[in-house]
Image 1 (cartoon, helix red, strand yellow):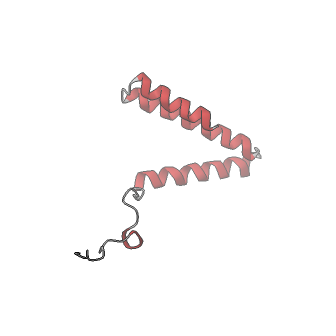
Image 2: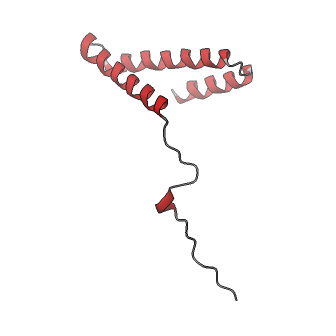
Image 3: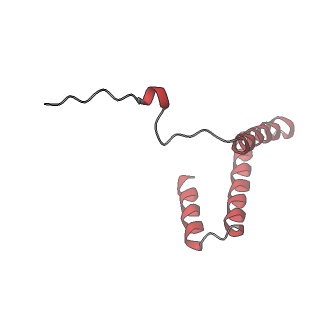
Length: 88
């Protein structure tokens, strides 16, 4: 019976095949969102829950604007909205 040599590629060395790192633009957006929410809570005295609701609403509006501007189908927008609303 032939024996197969052990695989030279392990998940520990290279990580899972589906994983990817954030690019610079994505990292900057995350940093700005975190900084904006911290500033909103610290300087305006808004409760954390209201600050998160405001940021979530702004993100939803931004997603719809991007979807419309890139001409996604209405079905794609509807699916995304359903996913967002059921997660909340």
